[in-house]
Image (cartoon, rainbow, N blue to C red):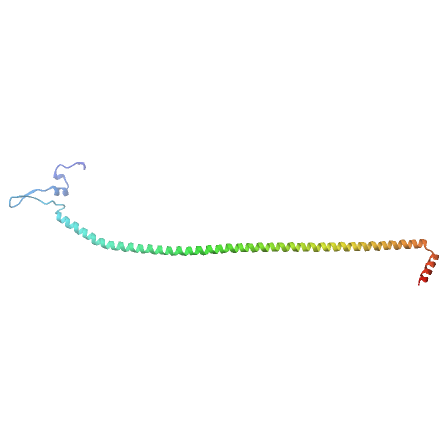
Length: 198
């Protein structure tokens, strides 16, 4: 078996395709002149190959027009779909931006409302604390007055009790002195003075 890289030495060793191209033999015509035979490939001469190539090219061109139209139609449909998707995305983005701005405004309003509520709560707490301080001060003052009144009443009661005890003690002491130092003759003299004074 011969190596495929070696060059064949004779025409018989060449494949049939190559053998037909190189088998140009001189043929004598009727007038005795020598002519060359046309080269052939697979039994077809060059102008036939050109005709076949042209027919194939025209078939491809006609088929290509239909394919081109279908490809162009498919691409146009795809482009339209992409444009529709882009328009929808733009619309959705605009809606999202509007929602974002609306919620940002709501958040800002809520923050302002929260600050106002916090200020109101602080003012109310300060008012409650001030009122509680006033009420506490008033209650302490009332309790002080009540305590002072109780103390004054207790002092008056103590003084009254002391006076009553002192009066009782002085009455008892007077009675005792009178008993000890006053007798019937002194009574008679005292009664005479009282009667004379009338």
